[in-house]
Length: 243
Image (tube, rainbow, N blue to C red; front, side):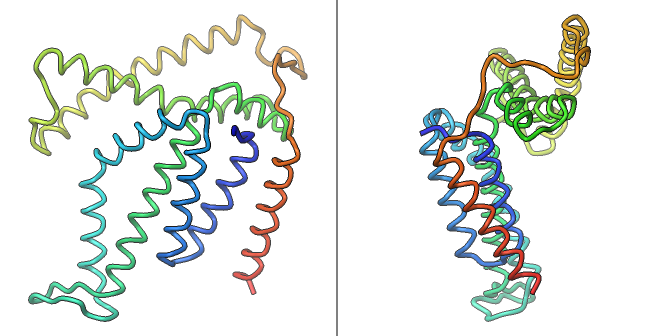
């Protein structure tokens, strides 16, 4: 089942708002499971799951570091274990797990958004009556991130073919290598921006106030029901928090 992009964006706004408003471990777990269900229902679920596993493996050290920092620097709550000034408390463990789940949620949301093609964002924002310039700018920014990561991945593969592996480098050497590689990747991206700008000028960008599209994204009954439900839940949550 393919959910309309507008419906998906409203669901994401609702879930991220809940994640920010509630400092509750179980709520964060429920949100991760909901996003996981949306990924499994997406048409590109196998590719999305492989990308998620790859990213989680790469960010495993970051998750462990964030968890340890939260545990060490939060000393309130019930003490589970103590060695000198180092304590593992209930509040530190809870906040560490919540922070880790929030980062997990962001990564999973990115996997959902990046699998959608460029033109779907244009159609979605056009349906919401956004100006075409703003729609094109937002869609370009969203599309730039996976393009940038793909170019960086290609450079790493070319280095691996020359027997240069990032896995064999220390943390400081990796940081230096990434800082060196980031400049050619950015230069390629800037060249693509220049080529796209020339193509837009040749096609008469902003020449006419209205534009036509080959495809249209119409909302079906389920999309309307999901969007209305999300808006109502969001209003109830915000009203409860404000009162």
